[in-house]
Length: 357
Image 1: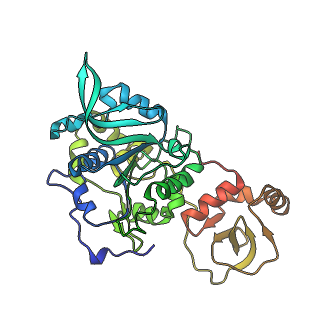
Image 2: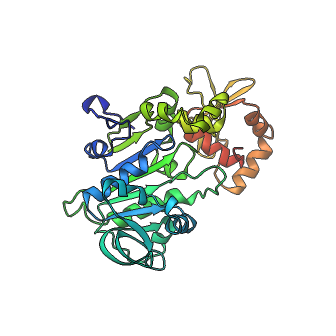
Image 3: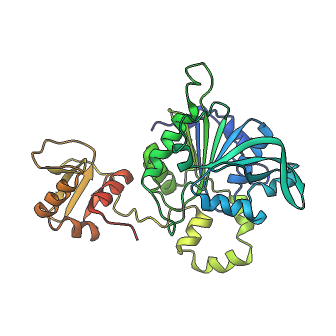
């Protein structure tokens, strides 16, 4: 993806060090992906912007379990803290698969009537199950916590589901001369192999940002990618009792994720972008082209070569590949198989059925 950072400027943070969502919005990206440290204002700032903007929006979460949690416990409800900003807003289950975001009248401490509606909440699978879903009323989609923690089951189809949901909700608005539906994807740096990031084709760009420390980029296709360092907030958070304790082991996966915004739960050591000069073409496996670097290393990339030895991404192809190259899987485990980029690494892991620990 191309970048045009040199053409735009951005005040990424507010005066207090939180992510500056209104400034991000002003860039005009149709898709805004913000992967940040814990509690740097991603969700708070985005929801505050949506309520202030006062245009209907759709709030997405991965599962019904998540919605059950945030609607049953005020301490887990992301809208409750916004009372500090003057928004007395709640999210309440209002249908079989929908939740209404709005200002409510209460009776006996329970929400009764919605007197002002801001938007609705749904899970991603729910949209796929509704025929004739009319999303024309929504200006934004906010997908909160789209990257689950490693302990939570990850479904490969989630990426496809989000793309289909976007097309469904966006509808024909652009053909009618209207702006595209705007999407906000918010998460912590748990897992760079998120199906959503893979299907959007931004994994390698995000991996480069994580590696170089670059905080944001705006692609030529109108996607805003952000991995904020939020230094001012992080310095304050580092003084809390818990983080003071965790600082004793800065190499821990949790500390690197929560305070340094690193995808520490992913092993990307096999990613080595290299020149093909001097390498020998070998075979094509699972859509990737394999080159022989030396007697002990293979290199996988998307740069094509001519080979009669092709192993397709089918069960029969996998079985044939294992018989023809019985030691390839072991070489991969031993770090003797290098990949040109993160997507290639993800693809060969899936092909070999090797899950990341």
